[in-house]
Image 1: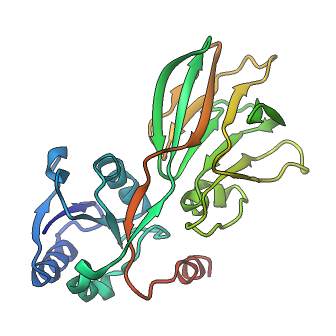
Image 2: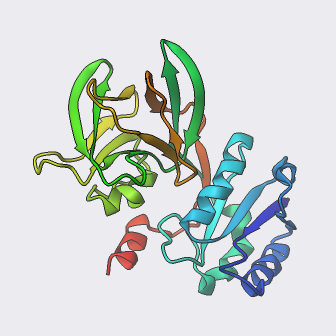
Image 3: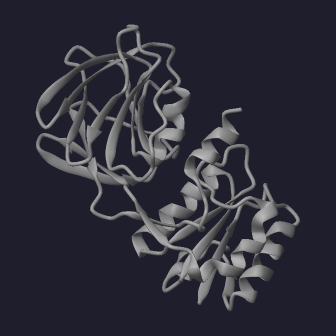
Length: 265
């Protein structure tokens, strides 16, 4: 049973937590390997252990999801909505072989220009359409299955999964959603009108996002907090649920809303 440990060295600089986790995993019969930049280490792995915050979890998920490797987060960061084990509970890793695997929805975005796909990218948490560093509002037109949701004027729009509802969308005033649900959550960022709220759409919907006709300002797209990509003139983006799910290990007895309550005190 090969398990890859993905450690945020800034959160565990002396590798004390990493070594403790490795010891408990070896008691479970695991062969532990530390990720050191070679992505092929995840090939054929039973699971991956992410040690850090939610950002660390998302970086690890980018490597595990295409390979169908389940991921388990250990909370060492400022936020830990995506983590399922805290450092004081590392002894539970002795039972990792019995942890059930849960599927969590992911997203894919197709960047289109003139009916042609220019690029396709995936996200576990969210896609963010924003104004970048400019101190100006931007206007975005949104459609769901070809039906207009409206024009959103403000700092941008977040399109997230249920899992990602506790990320940037939560900071922007969006709802906390049970990660077991298959939905698309659309949350405006600093909307220019007080009447604009989040939309919760069925995951089978296809969402189209494009600059409004008169928009002349730069709009950027980022996935899971990664490097933004500037949308070129004539480009639009289609967002839909990915056919590939994120696989997560869920320790018995873990309750998602307990995690939310801890971080919202």
